Image (cartoon, rainbow, N blue to C red; front, side):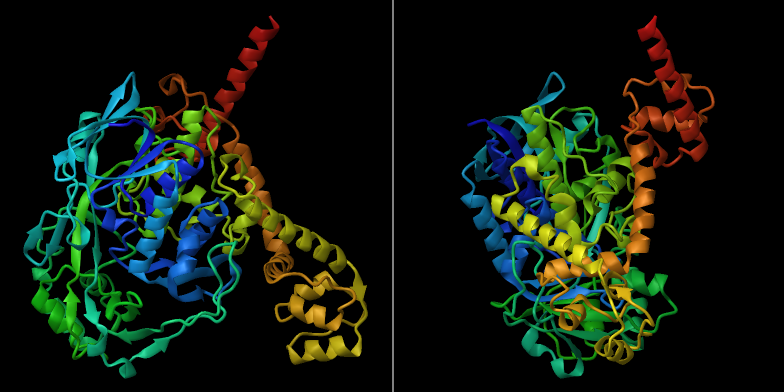
Length: 632
C-alpha cells in the first residue's frame, strides 16, 4: 500500500484536527478510522464548548483549527456561560446538530488534497532505529492486513481500545453507540514497552421528544445574536432551538438508591477509573447525599430527529431502573427511551511517557492525542489533536516545535498538566486549572495565538489581516482614551442613572471605562468626536483591558517570573542521582521524567520547592564550570 508522511489513527475530534493540520501543512497524510460514518462522532453530549472548554475551542480556531468553524456552521443553540461572573470565566457553549456536524467535518477531511481517508483498523505500529516506520492493518472486511509505511503516527483512538459497554450486569465488547472496538493496537503498544490503564466514562439515556411534557420544564433559550466560536465569523441571528431544565426529586433518588447495587459501577463489574468531574447520577447521589435534587437539561440532538439528550443523567443502571427513574421526573413521566445510558471503559496510556509536544519519549515520530492520553471531552481531544498534528508535521520538517506554555493558552495548561503531572482519572479542563485565566480569556485567543501559529501555514491571510485590523482599532481607541473630559451635565446624568459617583474635576476617558457600569458605547455616545468608533470585538477588548487593568498587570508580573523558570532549560543528560541535596523521591521522579525546564521540574509531583532550589544552584555551578573551561 502507498506510504504516507503521517498516519492518524482515529477520526474523532482529536483525529480530525490532527489530520487536517498535518495535511494543510503540506504533509502527505492518511487518517484511519474503524468506520467512516463515525467521523467526529458525538457519542455523548451533542454540544461543543462550555466552561473552560469554550476557551479551548476559540484557541483551536485562533491557531487555524476546524472545530470552531464547523460548530458555527451547525449549531442549533448558542449561549455565553458565566456572564454573571468575571470575564476570566466567560465561556461560549453551543448545542450541535450531531448528524450535520459529523457530515460537515467529514466534508472538510474529504476536501483536503493531501489527506486520504482509510476505513480500517490499525493492528499495530512498527519502528526502525527507534522511529516510526509503518502501521499494520488488521485483516477484515475493509482491509487485508496491509502494511502502510509512514514516518510519523498520531494515535487518536478515543475510547475504542478494547472498549466494553456496561449496562447493569450486561457487558458488550464494543465501542460507543454500537460501533466496533479496536482490538489489536493495545497489544502493539504493550509490546513497545508502554503500560496501559483502564479509564471509564458514560452517557445518559436519550428520549423521544414528542413523549415529553415540555410545559412542565423551564425553557432555556440561546443568545441573540449568537456569538460565534470562530474569529472569522460574525454574530448570527439564525433561529435556535430551546433546551429545557428539570430536576430529580426524592422519588427519583429512592428508585436509584434502592437499585444502586445493580449499577455496573457499584456491583464491581467496572474495573476502570471514572471521571470525578462528570459523575453518573448514582455517583452524584452517593457523593452529594445532602442534595435533595439535581438539575437535568433536556437537549435536542438535531434538527432532523426528535431524540433528546438527558444531560446530567449519565448512568450504568439496568434498563428497567432507567425507565423507572426517568418517569419520576417532571416533564418525563410519559417519556419513551430511545437509547439507554451506559458506561464504557477503555485502554489508555500514562501521558507521562510523552514530552511537551505530545510525542512519545521512547519512539521518535509517535504522537498521542485525546482520550488515549487520559483526558475526557471533545474539546480537550480536539486541542490535543491540533497540537500533536502541528508538532508531528514540524518534527518531520526538522523545524522547531510549537510549544504553548501555561501562560500562553488553555491548550498549554492542558498539555502541560497531562505530560508534566499526569492524571489518575479522566482529565477534564477547568478554568481553575489555569493560573493566568484573566490573561487567557476566550475573547483574546486570536491576539494570543494567531501570530504564534503563523509559521505553521495554518493561518490564512484573511485571518491575519482581520487580526491586524482589530489590533489597529484597539491601538487607536486606547490613544484617544488617554484624553480627559470635564464632568459636564450629560456625563453626570448618565453616571447617576448607572449608580456611579460622578467626578468633581476632569477625568480621563480610560478611567471612566474602569467604572463597572460605563461601557465603551456609552463613551462613544457622549463624546463621538473624542472616542474612536471601532468594531464590537475591539470594543470588548478595550473595555476589559481597561476595567481589569490592575489585575491584568499583576498577572503579567507573575507570568514574567513563570517565564524565567520555563526558559531555564535543563540538559537532558543530567545525572540526577549525583546531585547532592536532592531528596531520593525527587531524584527518582526527575530521572524518570527528564523535564525540559526548571519550571516543568517544579510541577512534578514529588519535587518540592527545596529540590528546585537545589537544581538552580547546580545549574549555576555547572554553567560557571563550563565558562571556566572555555576561558582556560
